[in-house]
Image 1 (tube, rainbow, N blue to C red):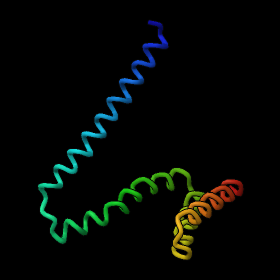
Image 2 (cartoon, helix red, strand yellow):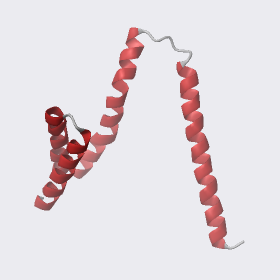
Image 3 (tube, rainbow, N blue to C red):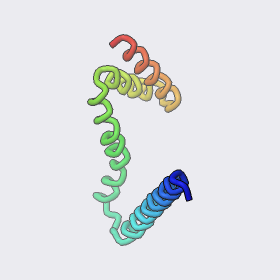
Amino acid sequence: MSASDSVSLMALLAILGMAAATGLMRISGYWLMGHVPLTARVRKMLEALPGSVVAAIVLPIMVRNGVPAFLAVGAVIAAMLVRRNEFIAIFVGLAVASLARAAF
């Protein structure tokens, strides 16, 4: 067994471990939610969750990348409000980000 084989084996074990952990988290989440009564308050919280996740991912990226990122996200929001098409919004956001990076 060479050094590269052991690295490959370790990488494979790490990937399998992460896949198992991810699967366990998803299964346990479904199991736990099966024991939670779906009141109006819980339903509202679950409906707001995707937006919260997006904000938690996007805001640090915007802060780290500065003005071009803020302009790109603003363009995506504007495109979604006007066209209601995710592909157009992504294209507009990428175009604005590229132009803003070239300008700054």
